[in-house]
Length: 509
Image 1 (spheres, rainbow, N blue to C red):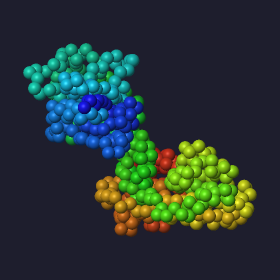
Image 2 (spheres, helix red, strand yellow):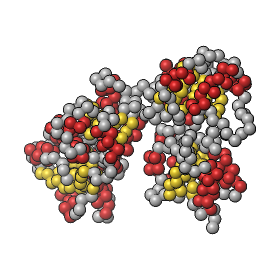
Image 3 (cartoon, one colour):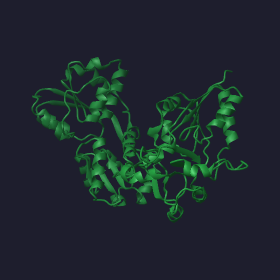
């Protein structure tokens, strides 16, 4: 059997957005993924269904597999003819033992490729507002292990040269040896007033930074119970943090946000929250399900030429409608001559992805906003088709009817309470460990409360954020105090409204 190939892929320092395009492509074609500790599991969403995943993570106190076992595993899987991705934190060759793994593959003639990643040595300081080089402050940079191989006879670190010969020093995996590192630098001539920063969980929503000098950093770390994993930065560039801090001073930084959207939709909100420094906790309160019988929908699609308007109220409606359209061996040409309405920009984008530009999208993304724009369009006598969820309200239908048109509703998908395990989100919610709850539809409100036994008091100390007034009205009717209603009724608008709320100081950190 012909041997497969191994890709040594750097996943970056933690923020999943920092993996390279080539790294994602490798994940997409892998048969086997052998991955490290501290990697975000969501990276696996880029893998093919059914891919074999093998966790080989190592921490300071526990190794799931020793390095020689990992090397052998790479060889064995490749000899089975499989495409293997060895997914490593940071960069494979920057203090990551990727070189040893490559050597093991070379010895048995297994083809491999190295896909570099963004090293925590440069990314983590950047997320803390510390440039590792700066024209006025630092023209040289050295990356040093803070934890040398214990089997070596003696240290290979030339402390007397490093201490005064390099402007910026970055130590990886060194927090456990911080007193020794500081002592060596001071003993070798580095000034006790030299700035130093410790950055824990860098590039993520739990990032924590301590700044001091070589004279006091050990005491500061001990008093704050600072623990690994962390990056240590030594040098004058640390002073730039006060001016260049951009990530961990965002209004939503570190806030734990409950995302109640359906699983298939949650990622767009979660990714945006991560970009703004928040920690999304996905607890889908609803699931999008197919309708049990498509007879009514099929009849409406095949009779589409009898309608003058086709109106979509959600991206889910677009997806479900076109899925059925294609199964009936029709395509977008079947919609010729019919005007298309979209109630909001997300729905419009779903249509545009299928090559259709809506004839009408209101400025206010609600049923009332949609109806306001229809008043000037002379729709008397027109027939409207509304493909919607099974639990949609009558507001839009009744409003179009009052304007003199005829409306046919057809169910294209069902919105049902989720049945999957949601223990983590529920436990955090009941333990007051959630800062914000987001509701993106009325169904997310009613179904979350059902999951909590219908007791709104269980979340009364949590900030409630709603995507629009209809959702907010449902929440208020259910007994919830609504703190935030997005002015722009979109996912970006919801995140912006949460930022403005915390910027205003109405809720303390």
